[in-house]
Length: 442
Image 1 (cartoon, rainbow, N blue to C red):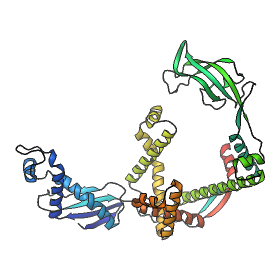
Image 2: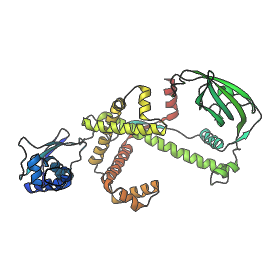
Image 3: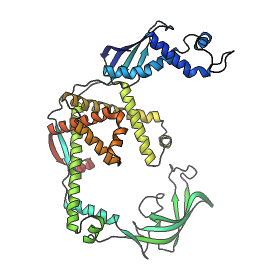
Image 4: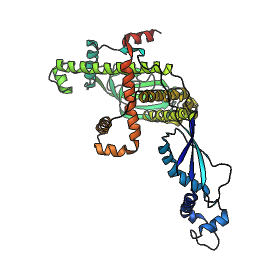
């Protein structure tokens, strides 16, 4: 079987695949051997009826369709490789108008959707703004205070509970005279002001001391997940066992030694500042690259096959579903809350999906136009980075990536292209904090 290219236009590639009579016959024989056990013909035990008898009883084309699938299963990928075609969707198959016959070959015509080969314009010397943040001593101080709070310890106090304190309590919830399921706990730890409990619950515990009892009156939200409680008034009978307050460690050499490899606070502060500056530089680069890509995207208009947008929308829907699962919610619950279907959510992703698809094609186009290739050294470094990231042996990573080397090379070339347009850009730095203030005022 040798594929023959017929045409390549409008994001479609059409080619033919000719199969000989011998190939078609062999495929039918293979299918017969796979399926003969499911045929029942009088006079023959299951699986023992000859192929000719089955074809006489059910029609000579009984194995044609599966034989064609068998031939395409191996022939189609080979044809794509030989023609250098990368499909973005399922092919359309045309076997012509003449019926297939036993003992004869046939020619299949396949039409495959492909991505457009974009010729990118106006991607050098792009003028764009890049938001930058200058790290200050105040930033370092804030980071130190965050470290201080992360290393605080809770100590019992005799004073009344204040906002931010943690209380240990028992509670039992009632609607009217009936205690409801799921509204009871013993020795529950609750940080006041955390917003963990029903609105109004935590505020009413402020001022309570250890050993005190308190009836907390609340109204469940109308959209509360337990429908039998939604919108209803309830009383929680609470008993406070203990009030704990954060005891912050001093910001000194001892704290620095406890949380880092440094012996002095000054050394630790210098390291924190260096890390913050690295984060700020990375954020500025990320913002700058996005700004440059936005300009290039706006300067290049082209169409893409709808199947590419649909596939990307489907990917985004799966990503969103994973995010929901991480937050403890299912897609079914989310759709029920919004009174929507998954198809509605997917449709809402379509505009962003189209932008994602086109942006990738633009980057690929720049890589192609600039002649970027992935060198062996770069590929080996990619393997090493992946091995370090996933804590695996490099050879094991290579084994896992064996079927995805082409995609890995594309990723390398894409990064080269993005780095190239960023290096070529004419960037104006603007204060990131000032931009935030402007946005807040608006």
